[in-house]
Image (cartoon, rainbow over all chains, first blue to last red; front, side):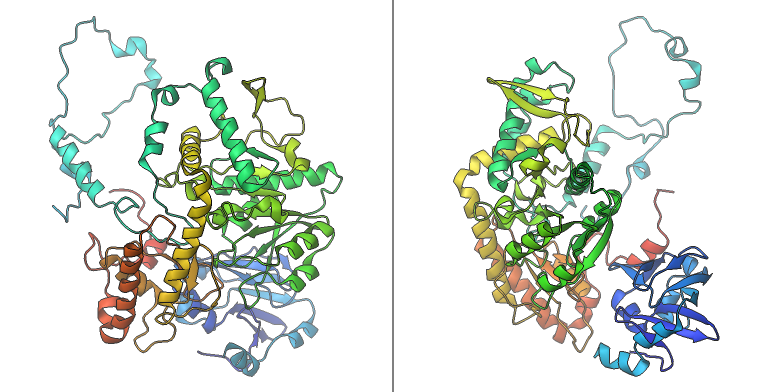
Length: 124
Length: 482
């Protein structure tokens, strides 16, 4: 299982990566593996606001449909449209392929997320 | 002919025919004189041109490919694929039933109305609910109707703001779907390590916006929610209602009743518990039973009996209205009615045997597959596949290999809370020999996983089509011929 050291993680297997003031959100390698082959990714609208813990996307695989939850409060500022055509790219590299980019509401919330090291222990 | 694999269009030869009509002995008239020009088709219909023998052979060969309860064991968890006695079919096809028209005056259909009325009474007794409506035509529709009743009841009490339905993470996917359709927000409650509801977590979730809790009991792991009395108190104290998904009623007949457990609403699946065919996705039947407080909101028409005369009552101002055209799927009701009367007190034995069969299989298999929760189960149980193994044999591989052994695979990868789930529901109608045959096949497969993994990875081997590329099918579906 691959874990990126400088990313933030949730117990629901989402990751968050900071890039300057922006944050990118996706699913972890562990998540893509347990879902199996991904066939559809539902992507939210731009400028939509989501609370921490609310569902912003649904990912369908051959096995299941899974809700994907917000790690923090934020407004969607970017969406990864290529996932509509190529949902399998999440299987190929779950960390390189983010689902949404957001503007964080409160940076303090990052402290509530797991570090790479903590996430690795969590998955054991 | 075993590998017969053609479409009827591929058999078609121009001018080949299946009929020879006698000479027309009435005056012919031009078609455009009787049908308006705009309704006439401009080009010939693309119908296959085949002989009568072609038609007979084509459909017979296709039907031979079918797999159903009548051809083999079908342990599809959560679906209750029990045997459907043929006498029920016989009764449902009596002329007196099949020639009825739904708009006939009620005075001419007293027998049919009486049957429905009595079926309602029987289901009320079996579930312990005050009143039953037979109208919903599927379990999912029963769920939607039930949730609409919750909404109607709360609105009538001036509590229309309640917008949250709590649903366990082990629930059927229809539960949150129905909640959304009824305009509710579904909130998931996680199961505890025993696979049941965590009362402390439930307590923390209840608030003034909680409309209710949807619960399947026994749940989809086949485990009885032992804390149901405590759960009932928590939900009702918070002003919510308790909804019972009756999908697993086959474990409860004559033993316990949703009404006695404190549920306000229950739906039943006649096509599961009451032995009517599942069909190709239909027709189903999902009657709902409710408490006295909810009766006035039930769908119309209601069947009423006045001094031995039966009638349909549409006049109920609080009703949520009709949820299905006419009165529900009547043919299915006849079969369920016949089943219940035939079984009588033995309905209890059906549940007891269903539970016994499931526990027998669970005990025989638990040393060969991972059993995540080792408790006495009800009518079904869930294995977590083979676990980590040298050749990475998955639950999907096991399921596909079962087809080679002549069995319909169990439900796989559901419920979602068990990794690599294999959900097995044998039902009460299978003999010990059948159960043993299936157990033996599963044990053999667990050995093959070590000794001959390729055999599993490439299964199934003896089917008209081999392992399908499910990913490609989902990503690039071809939905029509040519």
